[in-house]
Length: 246
Image (cartoon, rainbow, N blue to C red):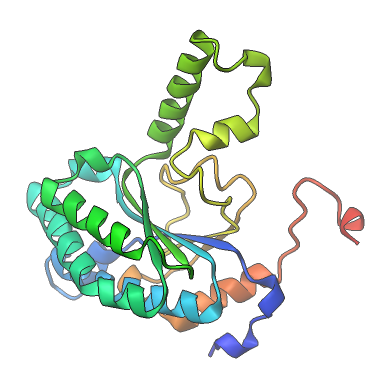
């Protein structure tokens, strides 16, 4: 059994991103409706947030609702939006207790008014918290994010605010939704699928990937610690050779 005590404190990933996959299949496996899985997935979010705080993770980003998810059946989308509102109300206490600052990335304007209102209110109430930053990717798509960044930069070039020859990674970063977040160190995907599904394509350039064959509602502290232990046993070279790291 993996335990927090086994982790090396000075080798923790600064930023963990998670693709929370498998709620629907978890529910169907038990003969339940997909929404049953989403409801249980919320409990896993709470546990994961609390464990990351306990471990000492500085940034946690959760793929909560993608731009492609709007194509799902209306009853499922409506349920997910309802769960978002109710969860934010309930979890405010958890955020305050654990000194967590809530953040969000994505096209928030596309969310139902009640959901966006609750989201902004909780963000405002936690904005002075100095512990872990929890970012919810809502109505998020990495290609849309990159497209928006290119359009914004192109507009500034057109208006002589930026010179084309001065465009570098720093300028691109400042125009992304994640401009105030560091790059991802560890990307975890549950459910056994091996793809990134249009999630943080720019920010995971040098992330370590960890795919686990466990549906999100069953993801536990044991699995989280196991993923971090796996990360700590890898050699991150960032294009260099092993000898250059010595």
